[in-house]
Picture 1 (cartoon, protein in one colour):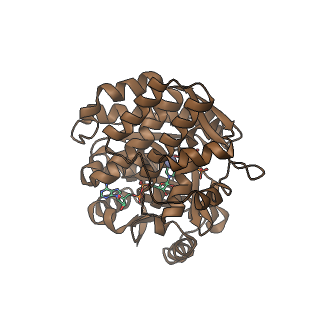
Picture 2 (cartoon, helix red, strand yellow; picture 1 turned 90 degrees about the vertical axis):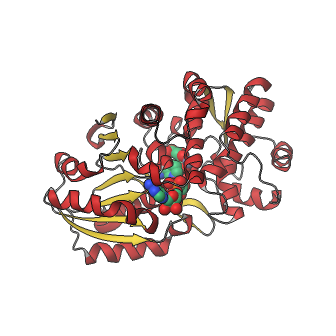
Length: 361
Ligand SMILES: NC(=O)c1ccc[n+]([C@@H]2O[C@H](COP(=O)([O-])OP(=O)(O)OC[C@H]3O[C@@H](n4cnc5c(N)ncnc54)[C@H](O)[C@@H]3O)[C@@H](O)[C@H]2O)c1
Ligand SMILES: O=C(O)C(=O)C[C@@H](O)[C@H](O)[C@H](O)COP(=O)(O)O
Ligand SMILES: [Zn+2]
């Protein structure tokens, strides 16, 4: 059964299809979405071995001619060299302006392939087939595509919406536990910034959250996360304001990813540490009660996510913060909360407090 969540963006609207064992419907759904002709399936070495054959067969059965490119796994792949390598793969696969790219994998493959699709021939359609929890609940939805450059995380990219998203929950059965937990960091984020009852539901179901065989809970958790992201993106597609709440925990988190070296902390882990930083800053500056701050910290701890990042010095972190996309005039702006479920944008944290909060982590 497919559970559909719409992303309402006028003529760029699309559906997120969520279900267990639905990857073999990829070709039919692409046809239904009006796609035609040739495509290039992009994946990584971990995901390809499990799911490329099903995806390719489904596309071929539906009448598409599908090429295939497989890349090394991990955050280091989200870089300029791989963008150029993929342009060559697009040419090799004979992609023209009516063709499309299929991103089969986690957020790294999705962000990278989406960026390639947004720029190859000045833009061809693309489809997101997220296979990590993080990609299902966050990166495949909303059209942020891009790559890292040596100076910082996601500093080059485009807003470019997919034609559809297909999330097969069964693919999570092969996702390593560390990566699954990292995805939960973004799920928790939605509760913190937007939906207090959802946060409470997560607390009440803590024991079941890591159980990939609990199809009902999984579908609810992925579905609600996608609904919240779709709701925010529909109101502010290009981050003129509101959309920045999805960056809760990411300001310090992205800086940590860069300073530690991409891949040392995977994205969701860095977001967990950044969320503790933001929660503690919220307790100091925007009225978050200590009790709610403690609930947030407990949630990340109980999920087995890092809540500390010792060993990285403040000066390096501060340099990384200065290139965050929300930074204005050298001053990083943080998403903070006044209570669980209520967030605000554009908050400055005094320099001394930023340093103190970092040193306490
Ligand atoms: N565009 C956005 O809105 C957005 C949102 C959140 C995160 N991101 C980006 O997404 C990236 C993180 O995504 P991620 O956590 O999916 O990382 P990832 O793409 O590196 O995937 C995590 C790991 O799991 C493996 N994997 C994925 N699916 C699997 C499966 N079903 N079975 C076995 N192995 C599997 C991958 O090969 C990889 O080793 C970061 O670059 C982050 O910046 C983007
Ligand atoms: O979709 C968004 O908007 C987000 O901020 C979602 C984040 O989880 C994601 O990590 C995103 O890539 C961060 O965006 P950036 O603009 O800070 O690079
Ligand atoms: Zn994120």
